[in-house]
Image (cartoon, rainbow, N blue to C red; front, side, top):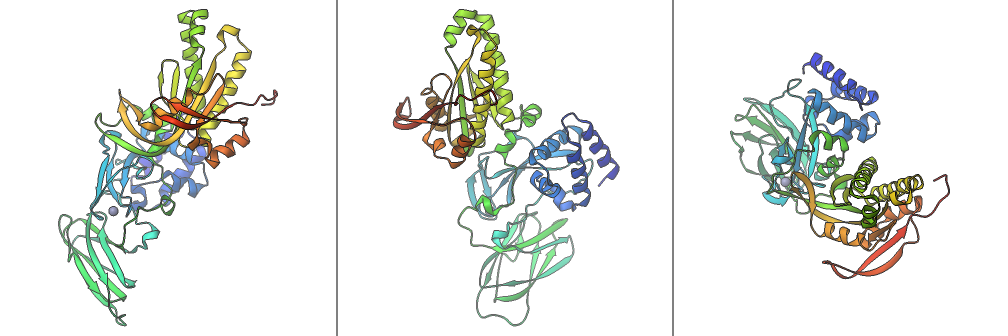
Length: 459
Ligand SMILES: [Zn+2]
């Protein structure tokens, strides 16, 4: 590692507006105390936990660090079964919906909120280890071994294995074999040798031993470096996210305003799309805009609408939202949770009420809000990352149920305990339930509508 260059880049980062000095110090400590392997793929969550810091501030520092040649940003796709990295790229333009895991021999659709993670590494001018990042198997797979072997050498480890089928593999060279442990318990240490050949070949590809202690010898003849892990080969269900280390998901990153400012022009290729297992979509619309245009005239009304877009964007972003686009007088935004979406709507409505008290009647803006949560597909629409699918359509239709100053939400949102908790903590209550025939969605849809409760000046 080029220490002086690291110091120089850290000092450049510290001078960037919006950087928190305590975060730069924590980064400096983490970077100097970590192992080279850890620095190949740095999760902002690890640094935040280590320094007891807010992860948002840490992510912002990493993002700003990419601008001073301190860090490189990396998109990674994980196999949902074994968690191994199946793809890695530095630009969203290289993302593909379909991925496959050579270890599990299994194809899957990459989900932006579950399988796609964003990590950072030191800029190559500071440190270049010459091999790709690897991801340790999660504890739930009971990994053993973990040895690394330079070319031309032998490295060994002893593991104790019970009856079952295991996988031995090198995540660097993407080679694997299957180890069957069967028969009577062995009192002696058994020894097996696995040879890393060129390409993605481990020899032999299958081994059988008895339960007990096994000395595993890795002989590397094919690569500058090879490693060996052993874990269970009984993988059928997708790994639960709760069993994995906390990640910065691709979907979370897209909700960082700093990311949008720095990398907003990096989008999926035009024909590609990514799954999003769950996202909250909010629509806002100005009610009575026809009257407003009549009374104020087009130029003044347009300015008012533009100003309101800026206010909505600023409030939504401060609550973790991402303004997707404006459509006429309407705004479409996405949120990671129903809770943060309600907080954003609450702040926007409060701000609008304050604003209305300070301007003539004709300039008073009234909004209505609609909210729905569900799966979506992320696409590149006209050079912007946009959502597509039934969740978006339903959110737009749910909004049409609301009148001025009202919020309408779908049943999926209303029954979310987090949404209910946020309602109790804010000024939204007394939702009225209605059964709606939503255009294009169908009849019998439950929609819940409320107004922000009038409160005294202390609100
Ligand atoms: Zn896999």
